[in-house]
Figure 1 (cartoon, rainbow, N blue to C red):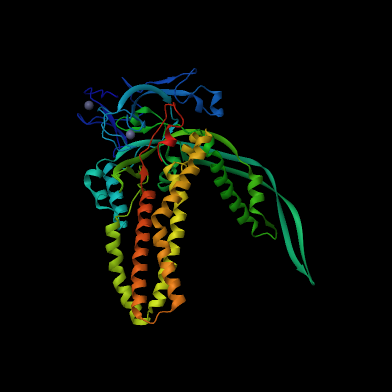
Figure 2 (figure 1 turned 45 degrees about the horizontal axis):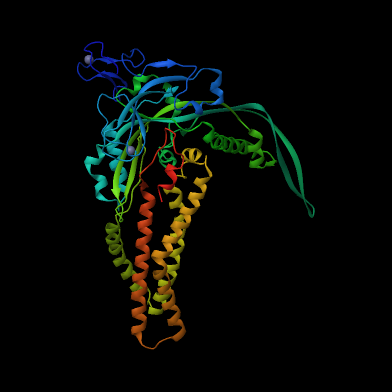
Length: 500
Ligand SMILES: [Zn+2]
Ligand SMILES: [Zn+2]
């Protein structure tokens, strides 16, 4: 807490002013000019053995890890942890959406080196969110409820920010192809170029509770705007804790940098008569990681709890980039809305088809059989994706933690099999009936029209059931199972078996 020098009340970081502000006496102060009185003491602790001690990167070994004391709140339901320098009790959890008092304690965490302060206010955030939802035609209307929108929380998410450089002469292979007489010639060369490359601010989220697909959806962050960290920026805000090692995303970050640099080199090479292979350039580039810096980036975060058909609770996340306002959300489809929408669309289609085509019942029955095959293929295509999402393996950070045991991989496989089985069980009848009926028609060619019409109606109903199941499973992909975190260590397998 930061005491206002004027009236002793709590000074908070004010987004609109980009300054510290006292709500009571309107005092405005520079975040770097104030000193804290009570909490969030910043300490240098060379013998640091806090929760993140195992995650200290090698580069940082040269200097002692700086830590800071924070209030950390743990959700009794999901184990999610959130840091807060707020003057009120925490009564709901942002990760699982539970309305429950969170347990508070003081602890040391690694001190970030830089921060991008919030630029977008809660009003900006609500506006961006509404804009996103107007584009989602079939979204359930509860998502637009203003009560939910007020649940957006300003959370600083930990990010690893990488800098890469390479200043050297690099050699890669190139060739020169030409045609003379009746022969094609290819000369192979070694091309040597002096390069000087520097990439700053390549960033990845460093929290396993912030899923990669969300952080990617609201990227990029302009890391250039990052400021030296001071805890004053966090006054009145929340923060997630870092629990992913910098090495997890380093390779991917390096790959992106190499890809970009190789493109630039090849662009220059185009004017010369030599062609070069991109892979060879990328390999030669081999940039050095200058440093990986722990940063805090602003995210407006909201969770919304829902129940699926079987009464199991699911959670939806909506996130907004607190710097740029870019929004992303888990948006399921309201199946009723979807069916009504499709019917409305079907009427003009039917009229158009009727005008230009004479649809024969035989053709319709073949079409229904083909549709049921396509439905089955797309259902199976979803199954491994669903398994991955349910098990959290679509997040590299979370996987890096989970992969520590073999049981996890086994559980993922079991889960995939289980998903496939459930698809088969739910749809086998609807899949076979149109195909069998269609085959019978082809085989016996009945004279009476009624056979054809009955077949088309039955096949159509079967296809509708399969399409609804596709929607239902799509909704499973668009929502998340309630999270189970284990940031405090303990039983590693707790997260794995509980989900199935
Ligand atoms: Zn004041
Ligand atoms: Zn929770």
